[in-house]
Structure formats: C-alpha cells, structure tokens
Length: 158
Image 1: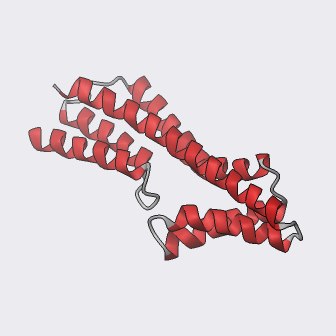
Image 2: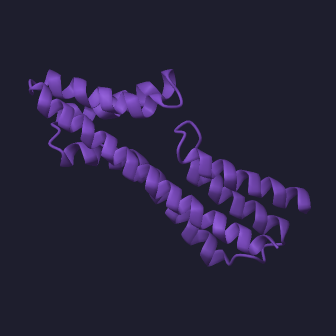
C-alpha cells in the first residue's frame, strides 16, 4: 500500500512537470495518480462521482491543450493558413525537437503559414505572438488543474 501511495505521488509530481514539458502528458498522469491512491486505499478516498468528474475534466483540459494555441493565433488575426501552420508546426516540433519543439514549432508554423498567405511580416509576427499567448494560457490551465489534483492527492494521502 505504501509503495502504491508513493508511486501515485510520483505520478502526480511528474504530471505537474508534464504541464510544462510538452512530451509528458501532465493532466492524464495527474489523474492516474488519483486512481492509484484510490486503489491503494480500497476506493475510499474519492467518490466515483468525483473520479468521473475529474476524468471528464482531464479529457477537456487535454483537448484544450491543442485548441487554445490555435485560438490564440486566431484572436491575434491569424488566417486559416496560419492556424494550420501552427498545428502542423506543433506536431512537427513535438516529434522532432522535444521538449520545446512543440512551442517553437507552433510559433514558427504560424509565421510560415501567415507569410505563405501573403501577409506582411508584422502581421505574421502578431499571429506567432498569438500562438505563444495561447500556449502560455494552455500551460497555465494544465498547471492549475494538475495542481488541484495534487492538492486532493496530498489531502487524502494520509
């Protein structure tokens, strides 16, 4: 039981780190920590309703992690090519230049997409800035969510 509780705490902490490092799925690992603690304590610390709600929120936060940066680009005037460039750059960066390639790739992809759409450099940079802002909002959202999970984990750990 103690080994599982320590393992769950490690998952929660790695999940928190994963909110910043794109190659580690932070919120899902944090949620898995709740499952480990529940299992270790015979499913007593958290109600099934709580776990279902947290599972749903984990899915929502994970999806938003991909949507928010593109939304940031759109808010700052990115065209469809800029948004597609952002998404393609994010995926390219994730696979070829981890861990920071996802952020750099999204910004670079938005810039490239805007320039390909014929926008002037200043407007392309604005769209890239939108991707950056969107990424920062996304990271903040993931950190807040995983932090809440860590709070509940530590609260019920003892």
